[in-house]
Image (tube, rainbow, N blue to C red; front, side, top):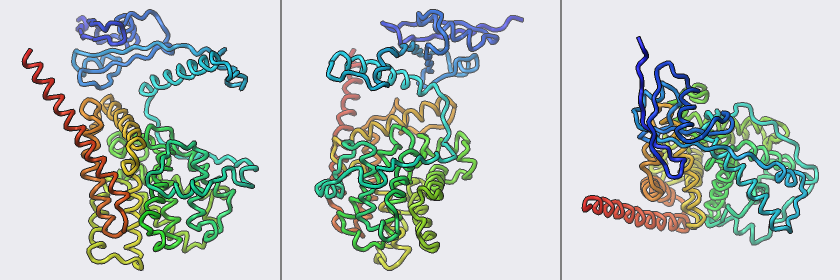
Length: 480
């Protein structure tokens, strides 16, 4: 008996202009045979697998495997995008690698820019075609710092910079990663951690370098985000002057928790870990797998003598620090949001007591949570790029979840979410209630909350304009 013939319709978007094709295949067709037919439909000749990226999406926008099973399980209408790799001009690139480019020659600089853009474009195309990479369980071996850097300060911070670092409107986009490490070092010094815990400067610098190297180059959950969270915590403490009421142990707990709160983040959230049954979900029994992993990576770094800034701390103090850091990092899991809010609200209503360790630990968790979601505290031109970064990470996760047949959150669906709709919900229902509750204990929170309220008003206005455009477009369609 002959194998049934399947027929699907494909809209090829990578040609100019886009066009429609119909392809046929049987149950015996191999993935390579189907791929060849799709390449022919896209007017691309015989090329090797390494020379082209093929992306097939269902009518719902999900990525579809190029196979009989993928095509027969996802309907009969698809869109196809095919991109050929542009080979890198290594003759242009080599002078850059050898540091021989004449940067006074505009044409030479233009050639270098063109080559680098080509490489970046190829990497972006390949990103989604690769399988998701699990977090790196072993922490990277920490390289020794440059001896010259260990002996003396690599960056000299002015008094103006040190004061600016204490402000909530600090712009993190203006600083390189090594400069951010110098700014983090300044925070340890300002909080008196170096003297209190006998931390040697070379050890601190190796620790901060190890932290930087154990953040992945995700769109959002990267080392710059780590710095932003730590700096906002620092700004909250100085703005509200609560730093004067906290003990040294509280300050180092906050610093370590903020620095480590997203270490080795894979770019896919807890829901993905659990639904995809990843190694992290299995190891941590589906309970805050990412946050558990972040803690483990941080304390693995601290276990190495070369990077252990707590090596001179007495055991009881170490245990207190470790307990506080773990509590603070776990509090960044939004699944624990309601529980923490209820607990802090009770402490605020009963009368917050800085002499009560349980009260103070809850306060530290609230401060870390506020710092973790604090982008809208910053000026709009500083905050908005972070929204784009977060949505890019969300959309990539939802695309993969669709391709793998896993549940996906509506707020991560690129076909349903806009920047305005994403922000109004999060700011209105998460950020403002969180900040207002913290303000019941910390004074002078208005410089922190004010910009958030303004951001909510701005995004609400933008969301309303988007709705009006949709209504207007629908009206015009009906009238036609």
